[in-house]
Length: 352
Ligand SMILES: Nc1ncnc2c1ncn2[C@@H]1O[C@H](COP(=O)(O)OP(=O)(O)OP(=O)(O)O)[C@@H](O)[C@H]1O
Ligand SMILES: [Mg+2]
Image (cartoon, rainbow, N blue to C red; front, side, top):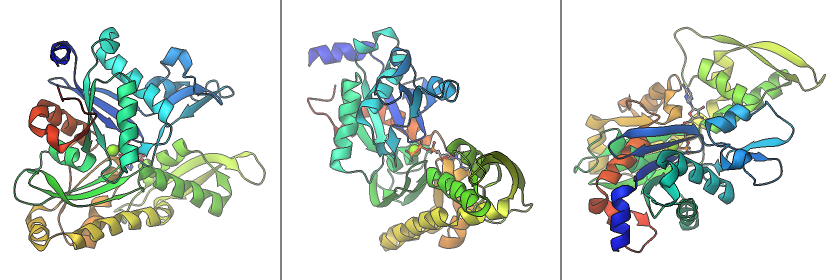
């Protein structure tokens, strides 16, 4: 369509890593231009986004707690997929407007969105519809592990195996890729959020202490680990006593937090070993030299590389800038849309 081609000259195409915790947007030739929490503040009990649709991302997170009664902060993605369609659309629309400036609605951009490889056709359709209604002209979906591999600079188009383990907030994606395709993959709905929940449950069960998700995440990042530390750590944590109802402070150790994280970490390790067991022998053999590359926020947990190396006997590398490799990968797709358009799900009617 001629109109589409003309629009294409003016509009800024975008690559989006629509994450459970964080959304990153990159634009061709500019790199990452937006990195904000996937959070939307709405009037409690409604889908009305505060500040005329502007209370999204960093702003929404800042509003939290300041006017507790009438506002709720919603994370519209759960387990890596859209759990609240309308709010996801409002969030995407705000991010697209923010990146595109005032003309965003008029110059509808083409967008490449990274989605977990394990999501259903219905869930894929929901992402495409949300982005379309948020103002995108063309929507292309790419598998997160492929985008992560490309963003990490792995030779995924070569006839050799590359293995990515992306431990996000809601999902862990494990994939072995070769010749620009996924050979074997596992996508499990376990990630950093489940580790936070494990910390909350541990403190409730052991100390009758109630803490919120944000504080649990802080504990995980500050003293959490997957394998023993050279020097074990302690941390003071405040919460509410479940029996007296009053605030209380306790000191916790990295050993007990590691113990509490055991289940989600074991599930992640199982997904990695199961993927290796399913792989073609030739590809599995390549991994002896190439090793496993880990990314996503969960790859930053202390000792994550060590437990995975111990469980698989392979070398484990944490990719450079593990939080942004999926977004960087989507921008490589943007640069090569014409070449790769047929490998992606999209919303039809030509690709211009
Ligand atoms: N240093 C750290 N140690 C442990 N966990 C961390 C660290 N930094 C971030 N995380 C965790 O990583 C998770 C977020 O990772 P990431 O941004 O890759 O997720 P996402 O892409 O938004 O989610 P998903 O890919 O599942 O949709 C959160 O659970 C966060 O607590
Ligand atoms: Mg992610």
